[in-house]
View 1 (cartoon, rainbow, N blue to C red):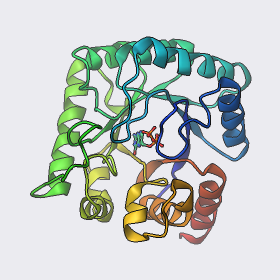
View 2: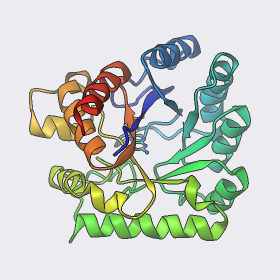
View 3: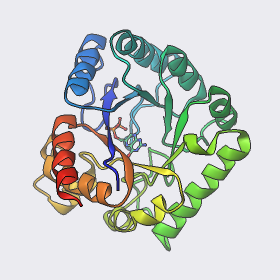
Amino acid sequence: MTTPRVMGVVNVTPDSFSDGGRYLDQAAALAHARRMIADGADILDIGGESTRPHAEPVTQADEIARVVPLIEAIRRESPIPISIDTMKPTVARAAVAAGAGMWNDVTALSFAPDSLAAAAALGCEVVLMHMRGEPATMQDDPRYDDVVAEVRAFLSGRAEAAVAAGVARDRILLDPGIGFGKALEHNLELLRNLDQISGLGFRVVLGVSRKRFVRAIDPSAVEASDRLGGSLAAALWGAHHGAAILRVHDVRETAQALKVWGAIKP
Ligand code: HH2
């Protein structure tokens, strides 16, 4: 069991659920990225569009204007791997040209007709995430017969579609999409059975940081920033069940938790 890499989230958006608005300003976003690098991030995930329920859609041009200057600025001062969190191939292309090496797509390359071909042509790593429905409505009473089997089948199908389109198998990562069209019990079932996702043979990305399921378990954790303890508990669970990358807001605390976990595990 290897220690997962820590992916620090930098949202350059006015409305992200945990840090929306804080880093819309480029200088503040760059300062935040620098802090995450100093705190031990292994990867930065840059996003210019929020995927929270009822978030405002963003035009391609605005999204590029938010993320590309930041990626260029980080690249000028650090070799840290950069991921672009977008569903739009045009934004992914611009981000990769600016220095990103990974495309993190919450729609698993299904948002645009040319997403799969774009990923293959870019040759970057791709994160294929499971989401039920669309951000606007995904939390309206999501239902599954067998959430683990359904998410597993979806991710396996998208991975095979990516391979068929020309994405190298070892460049594909899978993510069960905690909180994306899932009620508390669905999120918990997926975490409980994470081994079944890692068992598909691809590296697994896990995003549990500050998510609403923590509040569903501890109703006192009203604000996203109140959810560090729950986020760390779920992150370490993920580490123990094969996650290769943990996508987090609290880099320093997660990196420390992983160091302790790594020192304890045989
Ligand atoms: N979660 C969010 C966004 N992108 N990507 C992956 N691969 N996995 C996730 O779990 C994931 C993701 C939501 O978190 P955040 O970016 O903080 O909020 P928002 O979407 O509102 O910007």
